[in-house]
Length: 277
Image (spheres, rainbow, N blue to C red):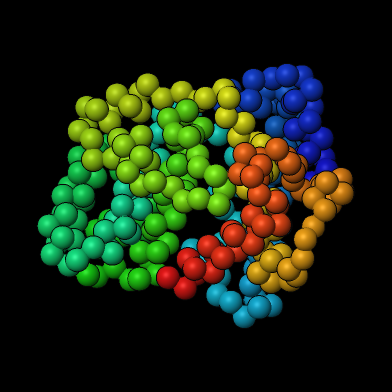
């Protein structure tokens, strides 16, 4: 099943179709439902594997986990305007998480302004219920874990902005600069300025979304291996020859100065620091 989906994506590449259009035109109407069902089943299979791994290790599932989601079979990615709006939502939630580290009086003065800005921003349709609750939470009332989870949304916002050509991503072993990220997506800008940013959004043709997702998946796999199975150097060139679930690009900018193994160890150290912060 996964190979069939990969072959379909390969066909799209072979035909040199535009990956930035909002439809997968090579499929055709007769096969659209088949590929939609196929994509949905692949997503659900990954979630089943996640559930099995977490249960076997005695760890809780993430909040709001479901094996099936209504959008599992969605073949149409959001347009640039929705991507720009969603990036700003993520940045707003991340800023709320960051504010949790400030002195109480500073939180008390700033957080009402942040929430009022959101209410007049026009972003209500793009924020999730759980994220809105975080924005609504008053000074000193946000759970430490919720605040930490909110901070990770800087990373998500940055990737969306990179797909629009509005932000350059740092090396894979570096964190996002909140100020640069917030400014790029219009965080705390006036309603008119934000609407202009959103209306003018367009995808950056130099940002390869498929290549980026494969690289992130490969790094995630390597970290999981380091944290839970083995810690030894891997011959990535030989290993990558047999990989079916992601494409390895050994020319990553973050890996030029240091070996893959050293980078993995550095990332592991950061992960451990974040996990205990």
